[in-house]
Image 1 (tube, rainbow, N blue to C red):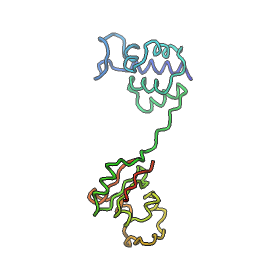
Image 2: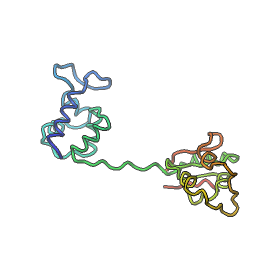
Image 3: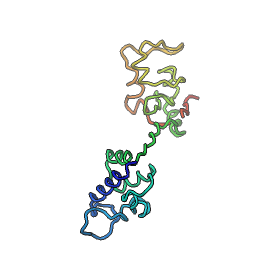
Length: 198
């Protein structure tokens, strides 16, 4: 942890804050620029003593949660937020992946569209749920394929028995995932569960 650089960065960002910004709970105007330490600590929901020690190079390494609170209090931009992490020697946790559980009401919606081929995909186009007509048109949905991968990397795949091949020149992705809302339902949802077939 670069204590000196971290302390200097915090002091500079605090001095750059405008006390009259909307939604800042600050005291009366003062001659010195920026916010007081106790005001930053209040905005960050932390003790004034600990924040003061951070600016005076006397505090132990702050946690990711503390850094996020300080970044919010100081209105740091994303690049400044990342720089704050680097100065503190803290590595942020990787963000969670896209949700993959299909909610029951979405499954019910699929079944209420018997004349429409409807599917639900994750953000990466992995198929999560579908209705019977979609299964008949697209085939092999029980393997939960990735529509983008199947469209662009498996053009020559042979349809399963009982599945009719798509009409020549008809792209699969627009028919299944990128068509209008009246013909397709593609939504973010999230462990792969909730198959919509009966």
